[in-house]
Length: 142
Image (cartoon, rainbow, N blue to C red; front, side, top):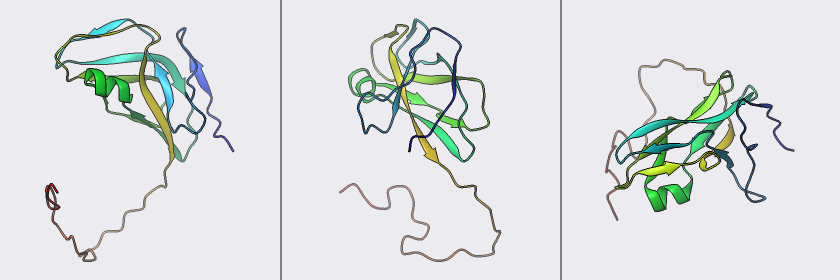
């Protein structure tokens, strides 16, 4: 059964869609022409508003081609079910060349996840695990 998500187009953009049957993410497109200089971040409009159902979230992920070929990545990608504004993509150019975006360019993908609401219970101690408090680099490189 498909998750039904009402959308509102506020610019002449493509409707989000899956490129292939079975894909996890729907493609999102730029609603504007712009450039991102090396080591610059920019907020890029999608021209879309979503009505994500309660109990779900839309998470924004990189397009693998942009990341692998141009070192362009997405940041800050949590779209809550209560948000009704335009979805904009924070894009970062980690490459050495200026990256040009044309209106209609695929800039991100959104994956919808069901999210449980957490209830926090304060306690004096947490249960022990074999890992314990070992953090960054604790498993080594190989």
